[in-house]
Image (cartoon, rainbow, N blue to C red; front, top):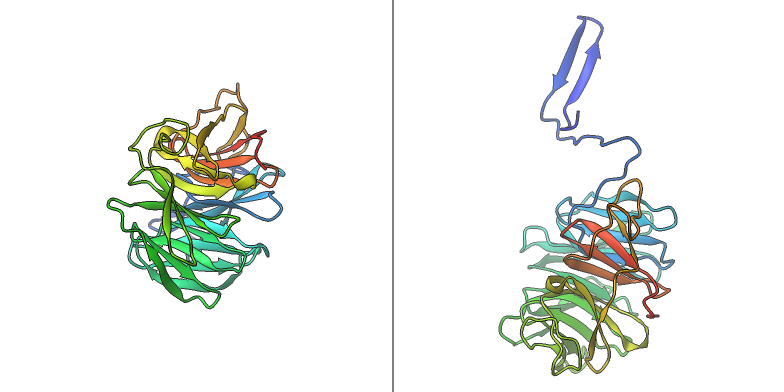
Amino acid sequence: APNGDVITAEWARHNIRRIFNTGLSGPGAPGVAPQFHQPNGIALDSTGNFLFIAEPLSNTVLRLNFTNNSTAPFLSTNLSRPVAVAVDSADNLYILNQAQGTNGYVLKFNQFGNLLGTNALNLTNATALALDALSNLYVTVQSNRILRIGPNGVPTLLSSLPNPGVSLQGIAVLDNGLLALSDAGNHAVWLLNPLTLSVSLLTGNNGPGNTIGTAPFAQLNRPYQLAKAGGGMLVVADWANDRVALVNSLGTLTELAWSNSAVWFGRSGDPVLPGGSQFVPMRQPVGIAVAPNGDVITAEWARHNIRRIFNTGLS
């Protein structure tokens, strides 16, 4: 049944039986993929054909296949409020689980969904993760702290931002080795040198707003996850401004137009193109990724959709 009850037809006593509270869920419509439910962190595999989507509300990581536009559950076992995902050069998948808030953990799976191990335990209020070229994981926790998790799985405190009101929601490893950190509390993006531990402001920290321009004037409004693009560009999910912000190495902020985009809802008929009756404007982007060809992909909360923006001019 739609609520997971199981119904049987039985010969011996000519009866119908309904079994309640089975713990199952309904099967859904035949051949229809599950609809997204507030998608969060996203990451592409090395081919750019598969997008992994963390859904904390459904305790699932979904996989969107861009070659045939189908979406299917990829993993749900051992997960507890997955909020972020990352993929390494061997297409191993790392999943950051928030769990109950004080007992978060990172799991590593191969491309077939086989569990390879646990990379960290007992993380508090974990929000985002990123990988560097040496397979070090960086995780933002406790609003203002950055952990480094080496290949041995042992987390160490890398740094703690001293600024008041810090709420770290995204992290990206830049080509120069610096860590970019989005701060939804101060509406800013910071840079952290993982060797010297020095912290500098890249852009924002000018109060919530939507002003574009050079770093002293640029404004963000609750930025969430980050992704790097070619040419030293940083792509930011600017949540409360309903936009994607582009930030260069000097901190100058511009806005990426999303009109040339397609929208996926995780069901048959995807994608929806501009002009279609179900096409929606960008609202509350949280997760973000950059495809090998420069397309920008967002996970949006308001209407539970994935968006792919074409011809961005990025690499």
